[in-house]
Image (tube, rainbow, N blue to C red; front, side, top):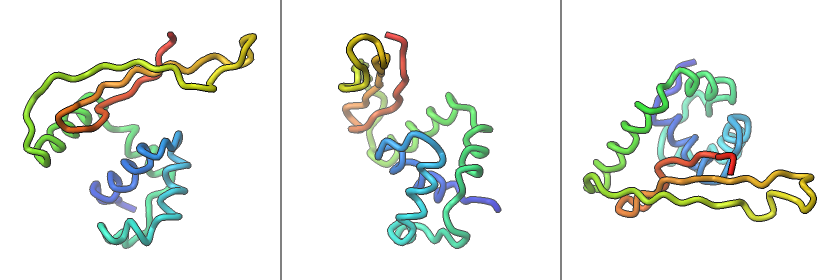
Length: 125
């Protein structure tokens, strides 16, 4: 089954914002919210499965996708290039005293003008 790009993005973006951590969680979320999603796109063949989502994103060039996504958001907002804020955080409660769990450190790139996170990466420290 071919999945329209608009439907894939409409499914994945809210899943990422809701902190889904796998294609399985995003697909499951889409199944639960299919009626809401259909208010914006038809999803005639239902929502893509986790296998389909993984296959679609596996063939994308991540850097090129990011450039296209940022350009698309800029076209929607009418904002041009700007300074990007870089922020690092350690997730609260992601570790335990004594080293039973290792802390999770994340670095984010934030576009203040577009009011959105452009990218987020887990780092060692």
